[in-house]
Image 1 (cartoon, helix red, strand yellow):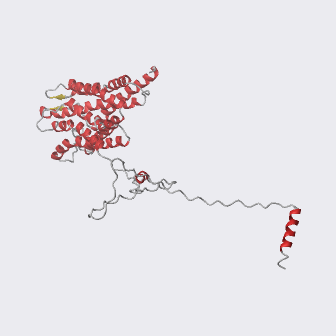
Image 2 (cartoon, one colour; image 1 turned 180 degrees about the horizontal axis):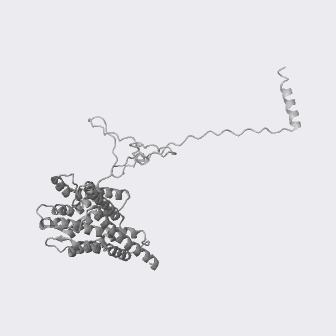
Length: 386
């Protein structure tokens, strides 16, 4: 790979990944999704854990966006080494999330936790996990589809959750990753949505992406794994953050829901891969400028079947033996010394000869003296009749 091409590839990947990480953090700060300067007691420590899942997910999704942007600059027939180097560059670009989160965490106070170290470690782990996600985005088209679909859905859910708090006099809610935490929902309903939102989202996206990949005639393995990549980011983000330590299930419920998200995504794509398609009709649709083809008989008799039918035997059936009544003399049987003659096959009758017309008679040309002799003879023979 030429130096100019590699510089452009790595530069675009690094820049887009860093820009994506900083942009997501800025949007999350502005909407109140992430607040890293809070003072939390021991009983509310799970709210800090929920923000760690957001930080890890920001780093991973930034690396993925960097890999997707660098995909268009990859040379044709590039090997695994080129893609791996590009993925490492995307992970380095996503690491911009580490200092951008550690700096505001210096003013945070969380009981029993060192905020700066913990949030820096989570952002670093997210960038490392994003390296592998970027490699998948560089290698497989279905992985890019899954990342974009799940990432868009996560942001839509987050905006729905914070939308009621944008009115004047409303407090900013604590929004969890992949959970509808809207203020207009009851606490019991929110707990149920926290358990089912991510698995249902992964299942639906897996079915849709698997069906799309199947219509494009991808391999069966590619179709079956098309719903894995996006939900796997949610699973990895909650693995980095942890299940929390509260008894109210504030963090543990979405944690276990995220653990099933990757499996639900694979289940949806596998269903799309194994479901049978509707049988196609045997009738050929006529084109606008061509007449339809004639239909065949349902049970045609082929010429081979007709030829295999046995012909009737030309020989007469053997006569039945005449019963002996004691008076009628029996036919003489051939002796053993003279064996019976084998029946000769009956030859077919010869065709009648076609009558041939006799050749026309050619009259002889007579000489003048012959004509005079004939005339005299006729005159003499007619004297007696007069």
